[in-house]
Image 1: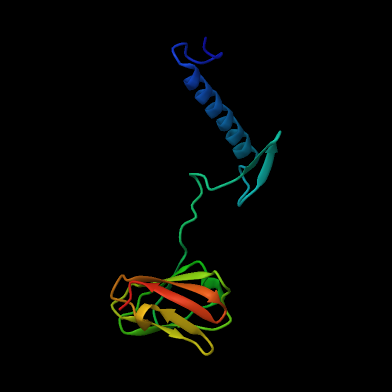
Image 2 (image 1 turned 90 degrees about the vertical axis):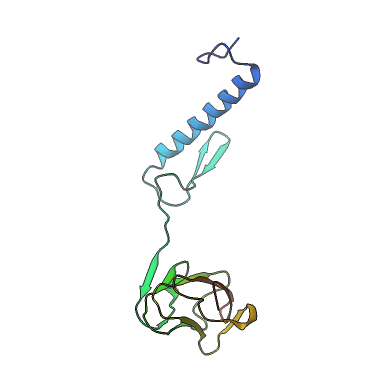
Length: 159
């Protein structure tokens, strides 16, 4: 015999699965209703069940792009962003020391025709495979991962 409100031709396993799905769906609906205008991670309680809000299909985390048209020195606000170099001639992407902390990442892109060279500012050490510090060409992308405030690892489409 099927559970109330479910089709009668389902097996016991299917009934249990649908009932569990409906329970989870109900909790998610309660959560979304309670937190419809709340941004970020918000814990809610539903009896003994705790749900933490994750991104939903209506959230748009997107990548923030900071486009530059000349040589540029990174700033603390560039952490987690894509710094795009739209420069026609060779240019520098300077990384100052003591601006970023361990674990932060800054991404870069050579959008213009000019090769971008990543330059270590005073007191900064940049490590890369083979010591390569220049973008490989137009549309090349790279990332800079900070090990500390004075050391970072550069990887990506480099030449």
